[in-house]
Image (cartoon, rainbow over all chains, first blue to last red; front, top):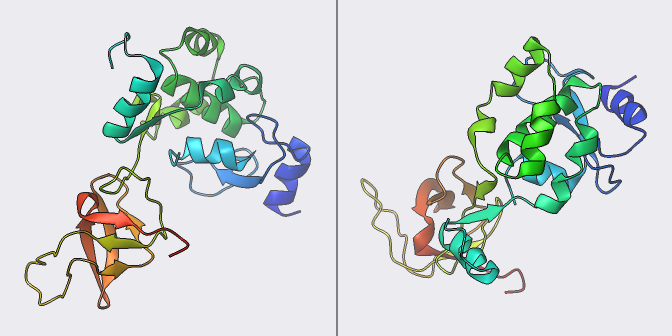
Amino acid sequence: MKLEDVIRSRSGNYCELCKSQQDLSVYEVPPQDQSNAENSALLCSNCLAQVEKKS
Amino acid sequence: MPKTVPCFAATVWHRLKKKAELDQQHWHCLTESMWSEVPAVQVLAWRMLNRLRNESWAADNLDMLYLTDETLAWAKATGDHENDGSVDLHRDCNGAILQNGDTVVLTKSLDVKGSTLNARLGTVVKNIRLVADNTEQIEGKIEGQTIVILTKYLRKQNEKQ
């Protein structure tokens, strides 16, 4: 299974921080050498923007 | 920021400082998600709670959130936890928020050192890139050359124009 599929099934397709279902994507939490299910999380665009300080 | 500043003035203050506050209400979600078994989620929760640590609810959660030594080292590795709840934003000369890919117009003729580049007032620069560690600067292409431009000398072009 692809990493994104693993993470989506683990989280039940909800943002792993706020449980939103809007605009989800896999975020590879820095710093990391190689992404895996342990060091990546499924985030909605709202959480992602604030985590990355873009809004 | 002084604690006595009323709400509307605080917004203005943050605009002036080119800052935006984290959405406090939104991040109460961490009270629940910090208990995730996924290390990546624990690290994100720990970093965000640290940014919000001036709020008592966030500080309380941070006290309860136990990370293994290994996970804690990872959480600290970016230095992100030393930031506060505000975010630095790039803004044009009018205070409008700039983003990667925006189109801007020069509000001043620029003298580009060591070049014959024609960067006159009114020059349109498409697809700008924000300079990550400096909110006073963006990068843009003029006549095929990428140069750094100060945000105070440009204005964001509305999408409809």
